[in-house]
Image (cartoon, rainbow, N blue to C red; front, side):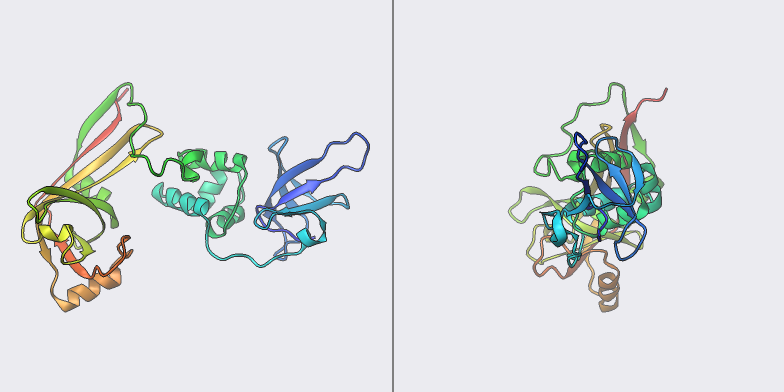
Length: 293
């Protein structure tokens, strides 16, 4: 018998009147996937060390083959994380939590969390609830629900407090990279606000775009650049607004350095090799949080 993290162990009771039992394998003790296993039982949610007997078989969730010798064979693993794993990893990094701390909060082994983040997986509802609670988010968010809805549809705090953010905290919130919105006067004369993938290098906001794109219309003018974050579960969040002149980065060494240090490529794809730099002359921010005391 061989298993992977996330597989289901099923016990088919042979005793008359005994109930069938199943659980999720959340810990391995041998690299080849042989017993024993740490199993979280679906009926009690408790984790126990199990040495499977002849009445047990493995259900490999990824391949949908319950029971039998075929299910016990270890199939090749598909490389790369699944959607849930990517969302778990993003939320964990956003909370600045290590994998070990997150696993401790979710009451699971670090190895199982590593499996969820790095392999296509189908975790149980109980596992998702524990992870959502550990990460301060929701099961719906980890599953990608509501992706096509605008943020901020939750109820406002009963006693919210809106306060200004200092320049140092604004710089910290801008961090090193992310997605922000640039406001420009488009070539047709109308105002436009569009999202861009940005980096922060030497206190300048930089992004890549195409010469004929809407963001490029801001070159040579003063533009506004905004980033924000909303915590849907807690109905609070922050926004930072940077205002300053936008210019094209033309020095070959500077372009090469920006390209080498870029965290991501532009999400829209295509030929977007022109670097634009915004040097903030004004940096302000606001935060919505519960009122003190």
